[in-house]
Structures are given as C-alpha cells and as structure tokens.
Image (cartoon, rainbow, N blue to C red; front, side):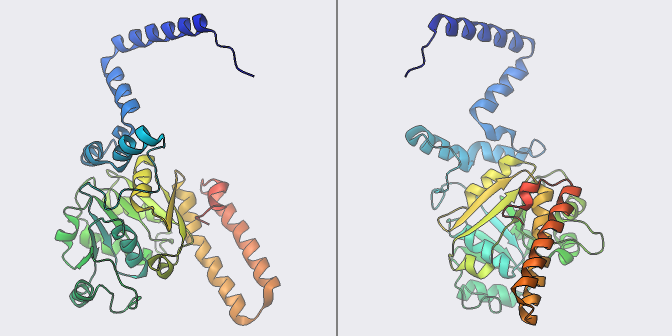
Length: 329
C-alpha cells in the first residue's frame, strides 16, 4: 500500500515556509548566515568559547572528512567507527601521566596513526620508552606503538597538542596541574580519564579541572569497564565519553574508536563521573568478599545494594539513572 501524495498541498506549504524564512532572514542577516553554517557544518558550533579549536575543526575535523567521503558515497553518518588510518589531518595528542591507563590510552590513539606524546616525570623512563617502546615498570611486557614518544619537557609536549588526555590520579591532579597549567595552550580541549573524588574538596574531576585551568575551554570525561592491560592487548572494550560539548565528545569518539575499542558519547557528565568513581569502590568490596571467602550470597547482596546506592547518589547530584546503569557504572 502506497501513501498518496498531495503535490499542490505540499508545494503550497513549501512556498509559505520559504516566504517566512526570507522574512526572518531579512530582519537579521546574521541569523541566516549562522543557521546556514550550522546546517552545512555542524562542527561550527564546537566550543563557542574556543575559537582556535573551532577553526581547527572547520578545516580538519574527522567528521567533516568522513561526511565528504562516507556520507556522500555510502549514505552513512559522519560518526563512523572505521576512521581512516592513518588520518590525513594534523592531529597531535598529548597524554599526561605515564601510568597504566596513560599507557593504554596512548596505545589506543597511536594505533590510529596519530602522533602521541606521553608526558612522564622521569627522564630515565622517557628514554627507556623511546628506545625500547616499553615502559620499564608498568606493563613492561607490552610493546607500545612506535608513534608514542615520551618526554619530560612540559612545554614541548603540550605546546602543539590538538587534544590533551589527562590520566593522572585524582588525588594528585590538583598539584600536577599547578605545575603544567602555564604550558597548556589556551582553548585546547582536555579529556579526563581519571576517576574518583578528591578527598580534600569532595570534588569530581570536572570541578578540579575548571578550578585549575578555567572554564574557557571544553572538557570531556571518559569512563567504562576498561582494564589497561586488556586495552593494550587489543581485547574488545567499550567506554563512554561525556561532555557538555557534544561535538567534542563525538570528535574524540571518532578519534579513538577502532575495531577493538568502541567509544559511546553522553551529555551526562556528572552521571559518568559518579559511575566512574563509585563503581571502583564496589569492585574493591566485591574483591574483599571473594578474598574472605564470604560466598556468592554476600557478594551478590553487596553489589546489588552498592549499585542501588550509587544510583541514588547520582540522582541526588543530578545524574540520569540510565547513565548509572550504563557503561560508566
């Protein structure tokens, strides 16, 4: 059964809509210009407070290139999980923190062919990574991609970064950021992979980053069931990135996603932060149940009640229940 079309009726309403659009745009040419720009290139909205990043994305965005290649010829959306590798755009990523998770995220990005700089504290560690492509202490049996370069020079590591990934433990973040904040270029987006609550202030990473680096840049936050070793070994992993700037979240998802590392996006920053912080406490308690031999009943009760408490805390702080039930929790 086919739906009958009404050509004269459709034409009439199209004509009315066109007249209304002309009248509106004649009153405010800027509105017309901006609306046309939004409809043609969505990423012009990226980080209105961030002129440098907005200009970069207009010229080099992953979504822009995918839109011209995949959407035109295959009818797919620009957010494709199979990005070009290596990507033909001047992206450079700096990972702050040379621990297990910093190494894992460096591996994820570098496998996409993106030049990746790992900012570490020790010159000996940096030299060992650059010469042997392995960390001397953390996961020393895991080979790092050759596009990972380690350094202790904060200025050289951060000055030309397109994106910065923060992988320093939460309790040390504030002191660390005080030492590097003058070397971080203004407006460069930051992805936080640190999970937890600062004991001195009871603040989440979103609070710490804005207090230390200001709110004139875009921030994103990563969480999910992801062991560093399994990420490096290429085991299938799914995580979520949350940001108030959804275009930043989508660009990061496109940048990091691959065949064995899938990134989903969310606007619920507090939900992702609560889930990332509290779930680790429940996991430690579950491990204690296992170690003490308390049995499956005790562990099941603990995990169930713990998840309920995590959900209530998230809702109280403004999170969506669905976020707590998702990858972040």
